[in-house]
Amino acid sequence: MTVKEAFDGIQQRMAENPAKLAGMNAVFQFDLTGEGGGQYHAVVKDGTGAINEGVADNPNITITMSASDFLDMIAGKLNSTAAFMSGKLKIKGDMGLAMKLQSLLG
Image 1 (cartoon, rainbow, N blue to C red):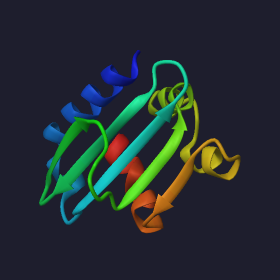
Image 2: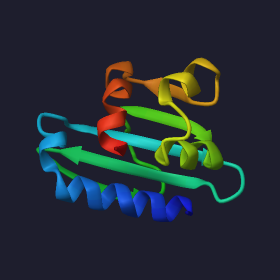
Image 3: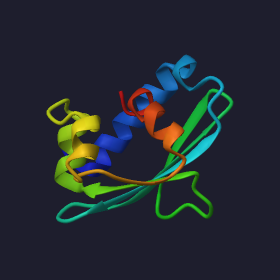
């Protein structure tokens, strides 16, 4: 799976299950490094979500990690808490949103 395919899947899951996004209004910036990486952002507002390539103007939270670790996390091979504790996942911004990240990605 590529990073683009992973984000396409996230977009589809957000559309299929808007209840997971209810009450969340935030912009999540993803800076994925290494081979196959890139910059994406998710705009979540009023029960809807949209994935866009590139850098968001004013993200509430920025998640930085390698593209391979991101793909492992999406596939369930890497626990997000363990990734954060080991330094594989870096977060800048609203830590409360980091806790909601799993529902966005899952």
